[in-house]
Structures are given as C-alpha cells and as structure tokens.
Amino acid sequence: MSSTCFLCHRCNKPLKISPDLSAMQKRSLEAQHHASPSAKMPVSGKLEDRTSRRHHPDRGRTAQESACCPFTLLGEPSTQRTLDSIQNTILETFETVSGQKDVEHPLCVDCMDGLLEELDTQLTLAEADNQKYKSFMERESLVSDEEREALNAELLAELQSLEQEEARLTQELQDVDHQHARIEAELKAAEAESRELEQQEEQDLKDYAALKMEELELTDELSSVENQLAYVQKQLQSLSKTDILNITFTILDEGPLGIINNFRLGRIPDIQVGWNEINAAWGQTALLLFTLSKIAGLQFQRYQLVPCGDHSYIKSLAGDEMLLLFSDGSHNIFYDNKYDRGMKAFLDCLQQFVKMLKKEEGLFLPYRIHVKGGMLEDATGSGKCYSIRTHLNTEDEWAKALKFMLTNLKLILAWASSKYYSKK
Ligand SMILES: [Zn+2]
Image 1 (spheres, rainbow, N blue to C red):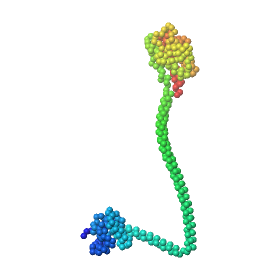
Image 2: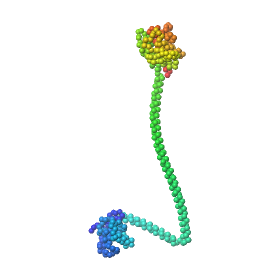
Image 3: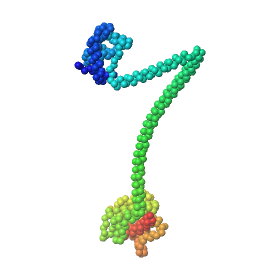
Image 4: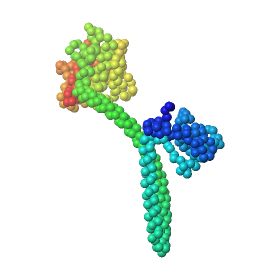
C-alpha cells in the first residue's frame, strides 16, 4: 500500500497522519470503490474522475491519493479550463454553500491552534455585537413616540453642536497648519542663519589662528630684539667705561724723537726716518687733536683740521688754501713752503685748544707755544725756543720742537682721558 502524504494548507509543512486517521482513510477508500456511482454523481461524470483530474498544490500526488482526500479548492487556478472542470467547480461550490458537503482543510497543529484562536476572537466580537443590537431593540420597543421625538431633537441638537465643533476644529486645524508653515519657514531661515554663522565662525577661527601665528612670530621677533638691545646696551656700557683716547693713541717721548702710535715724528742726522713714517705720524697727531677738539666741542678759528692718514692737511678758512702735513722731503727749506705753513697752522690749532683748556683747572704744559714764530719754548727756563718749521732750521731742532709738541699732547691726552672717561 502506498503511503499518503499531506501538506498543511497554510505553511506547506508535511503532515504526519495519526494511525486512526489512516485507517479511516483506508475504509473511506474501500467504501468509495463499492459505493453506487449515482450517489456521488448528482450532475454528471464520476466523482472519482473529478477528483482525479483536480489540480492540487501537491502536484506529485497520484490519482489514488487525490481520490482518498477530496479537499475542496475554490477558484483554484487551472491551466486547462474545460467545460467539465468548470461544471465540477460549480457543483462543489453549490454543495459547499448549501451545506451538503463539509469542507476539509488539512492543517498542522500550530496553524490549527492559530485558526481556532482567530475564530474565537471573531465569535466573541460577533456575540458582543449581537448583545448590543438586542439591547437597542429592547430599548427601542420601550420608548414612546414623544420620547423618540424628544430624543431625535436632542440628537439633532447634539449633531449640530458637533458639526459646529467640527467646523471650529477644522478652522483651528487650518490655523495650526498656517502656524506650522510659518514656523517651518522660520526654522529654515534660522537654519540658514545658523549655517552662515557656522561659516563665519569657521572663518573667524581661521583668522584667529593666523593672528595668533603672527603674534607668536612678533613675540619671537620682540624677544630677539630685546635680547639684541640688552646685548648692545651691555656693549655700550662697557664701551662707555673704555678710555678710547688712551687705547687709540700712544705717545712716547723718551728717546731723541717723539713717537705716536709707533710712528716717529721728525728726523735727526743719526736717525734718518723715512718721510712716509713722518707723514703717518703727522696723520695720527692731526687725528688726535681733531678728536680732542670734537670731544671738547671746540671749533677752531682760521683753520680746519683734515686728518687723512699720511696725507693729512689743514684747510685755511681765510683763503680756502690747503696747508700740508705731509712731504716727500722735496720741499724748499729756504722758502716759507706749504709744509712749514701747515705745521705752523697745526701749532696754532693746538694753542687754541690749550687756551681753552687753561680755563679748566689741573692742566700744566711744560712747553710754551709761540704761535707767531711757530716755536716751542724749552721747559728748562732758559728761554730757548725751537722752530717747528724746516725753513732755516736744523733737523735736530725741528725734531726737538716736534717732540716737545708731542709731549704737550701726551699730557693733554692724559688730562682729557681723566676728565672725560674716568667718571663713567
Ligand atoms: Zn500549518
């Protein structure tokens, strides 16, 4: 005997048939085989034929299985709608509607439970509705015509009131809609403004960062400049204490010749100093007097000192003439030459400076200066004078005059150094 296979109509799970049901099916099959065909064919054809040709979701079922389970499938899709199949469908529909046939739905236990619960709920609702209808019917039968009219009037008034309420609520709803639209527009505007503010904030943050960077750079720069200033002030303080005159100018007068900054000024027959050295010594001497006059704030009369190394000279303010403080030895010693006039002019300048200093206290110069003759007087008190010019002069006397002049300058240098630099 072939095993019968059913599927649940809802979830398509295969159904396990209980032994009792299987026996029932078997008996049913045998009964169908022996039953009279006229009882099963009220309209036309055999029921077996109908059921065997019926399309079922389980298309693998044999005609015999379909015959033992004649489940009703209303409106089932069919690929071959023949007149016979249409008649079968109509017949089954008629039988079902007229209660001549029980509808069988194979369902699994879970689906069956669910279906029963659903039917229970529907039943409960139907019973409640039934109860309500009954109570209404009872009340309706108790009410008189006057009361009904009064009730109708009351209900009509209530209806009008509710309609007015509805109109009012509709108006209110429209107002709320308008308000909603307005608020939505305001919200959009606020959002746009917010976006704009965010962009502005972003830009401000960028600007702030740039300014902060600039500030840091400027702070660094300021710090650097302050360091430089502190260093320079320290240097300045140190230099202020420095005796620039003593460092720059050194005068020696121990030997037969006066020496300034290692350059000998003058020459004697035994020591023939080169003219280049003498010129350089004159340049240093001129620079010393020029510097002293600047420090003391003295403006020379008649002359202007122009210290220029070994080509220094003195400019006469009267005739704009250049009086030389350098020579190559070729000047005419028998003539009042420019070299001699230059040295004489220098002595004049020195005398002007000494005259200014003599107003101060504590300065004593051993050698008197005679500007008119271009002479320096010996300090021994003998009254002997030595000419600073080469005109009609000997090298010995010229060198002596120059050395006396340097000695005077050395004392002036020491005095000026103590006056202008020792206090600092
Ligand atoms: Zn199921």
